[in-house]
Image 1 (cartoon, rainbow, N blue to C red):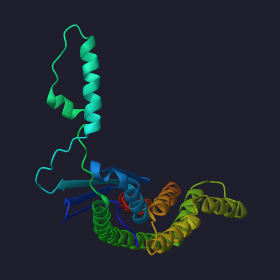
Image 2 (spheres, helix red, strand yellow):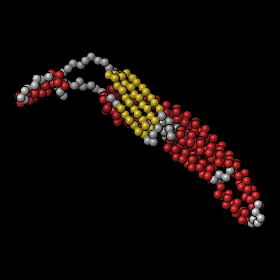
Image 3 (spheres, rainbow, N blue to C red):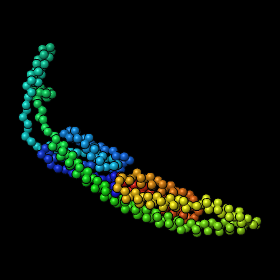
Image 4 (tube, rainbow, N blue to C red):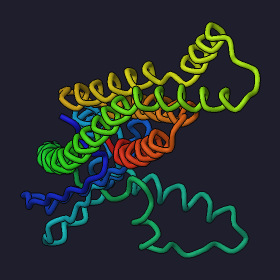
Length: 288
């Protein structure tokens, strides 16, 4: 199933430790490029976040952000580490003894010193599990959005393929008429000459001209590429790069058809083909 690379998803939930929310944005990109922003409490799960995104998405520039809001709680008691505080006070006394003008100790500054106040240990395991579970649900929403838009891209490409097939068939039907017109034109020019033409030489020139302007091979390749686009659209894997390559091949054959054109009708068909191919290319650039 073809999927778009452009999508947005947002999920949020409340946990015992606070409110969590994920926002994921993705746009088209040649490869998979992931940007992750996490709150300090969830830094440890960044590798797991990237693994989950890599498992679900094939291409695109992905911006993934998590927000965490702690639950309001009563202020935790300040617990001093008596040993660290005693060592810090002893050090301050030694320093003051060596100063020309001893400075008074500031209690607030002492409390800010690392190790004086015992940090409250919080188990972030449940919070991390909740965040990863919510991430999975957000990715589900993102993938579903990419698939819905991808289905629209598939429908558009399918319609363009049908239009291109009709143009190829139209060009193929014009070939006998174009060859006949070329023969009549050449014979009319020769009739204007006073010297009669050699019939054998005339046939050689007609064959040479027909070979030079022959577009059967280009039309065959155009038809083959169109059928390949249809087959690729039914694959169950990322197909954006393959489709992009097919667009280049289609455009090459359409250009050759135009350069070999010997009639206004086939020139017009070549231009219409290139317009359809360009419309398809714009959509393919957004396909995963």
